[in-house]
Image 1 (cartoon, one colour):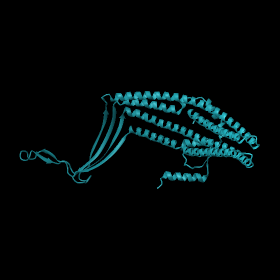
Image 2 (tube, rainbow, N blue to C red):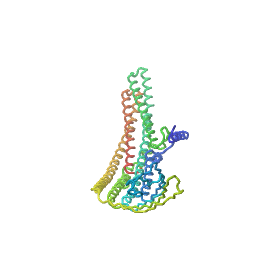
Image 3 (tube, one colour):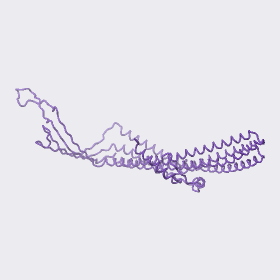
Image 4 (cartoon, one colour):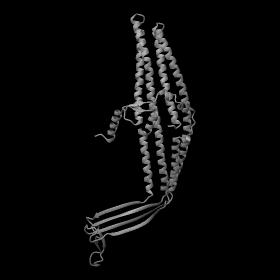
Length: 442
């Protein structure tokens, strides 16, 4: 029998396919990932868990009411030896007597209230900090999901661009192969020249298929990042050249950065505050704690099971206070306080290290983005020049002014230039995504 989530997943796939491809811009994909990815959905549930945990801890300091009902029946009532006051000096010195009736029934309730406990007051603050930490983790998970969606989205576009560029060269090479075959049949070229062009054409088609396969893989990763079932049709509406030439993306490498606004530093600060509270909590364990209680009980006893009949219920009511004063722990509390102090020092070091790491990462990603853009511009120009040279060589080959070896050589150079261009394109997209992540702009 299929589970309900599985059935819902199947219905979602059917609905999506019935509606046709899902059209998404990159911004829409990032927004969708921030709410529907598996990672963010889990972190959202963690926030809810932390919210309920805070309320649970708060309830510890509120009145607690417990009720209890018990019934017992002595098959063999307890028997005790008592001095023989009935026939002193005549009978035995002790006689066996039972003072317990067979049946007993009791019902009652107890109200308890914590009046003062230092650990509880500090724990209440700590639970709120833990809730804040879970919310910060959720914000970080959303940023990570946005970055992953952007990478997957751009990965699809880059792979399809690579397949498109290689596809442009296929007709040119096919024409050269047809011309060479005709010339070989007329005896103007050797079979080797035709074979070289055949090999180049197959290599080009294989590379094109490889890019198409990479695009399929990137689409699968995009669906995974968006929390969609595999096989969901997705149409990407943004164009690659628009994303590349976006002035806002180009200006990222010159944008300032304040680590105090970064979510990772917020997490580090929250952890440091938790360590401060942990140290205070260990110290507070040396303080007295005070609690109060009120209890009322109705008890019935009888030789036969007849509650409230011949023999009535008898009440028992009491209230009281309980003061617990820690006196001596053989140094255990002292060492726990020292451990908490060291934990606080570690948290402060971690906070400083996080701040410096964020600054260094931001600067490193700026340099990487600038270098990636320069490399992309260079490889784009090289590819255009290589294409121009290859086309001129193809024209010369058709006219008999260039050999097949020269044509094959230029074809290989153009193919290498295309591959280098696509790789620099991917490097630029990744560099900008990592820079945006380092600047906490997701």
